[in-house]
Length: 228
Image 1 (cartoon, rainbow, N blue to C red):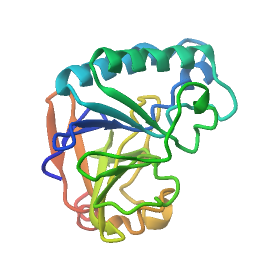
Image 2 (image 1 turned 90 degrees about the vertical axis):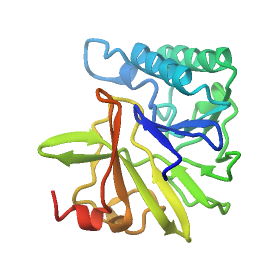
Image 3 (image 1 turned 180 degrees about the vertical axis):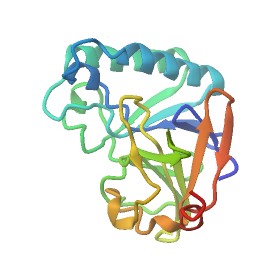
Image 4 (image 1 turned 90 degrees about the horizontal axis):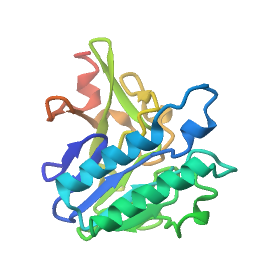
């Protein structure tokens, strides 16, 4: 996936002129048992604004689990979502929300899609169920992948060429920093929740170092596990 640009748990596809991020879990702060605010609204909006400024995408796609709570919509979540949509509109970017398994009340805020096809043919879906349409490449979230290297856990992307029905799959890390992530080092196909990962061995971890603004692409997990 040499054409893609990875940064801050999101991906930009130049050919499609699209920015994709997944698993924002807006409202997790409001539903947390932690007594002090976790700063979710400021964190999500500031990072989202920085991505828009960096890439100037034609469209922004939220790839599911936009909201955290299944059964309620806290005022804070409504306000954060409105902030994100306003930022996208101010940047002249189409704002598209794809429904995830958490998004049972998302239609109170927007008319969500089950999937969205980018201009390059890529199909964006959440990944909690098999996509109903064929595509040369799928971008999904859902599993919140992370990798542990030298005792440090880092959010990671998983890139699987020709791994689902002969098509490529990119699994995004959770955009929210309140999710610890599922460590993929010793996860096998049956450990993943998404049906788009049948065997994890062919998937290559990709890690972006935000401080250095460097992207590191590692060997497929089948080989990389031997090095960890």
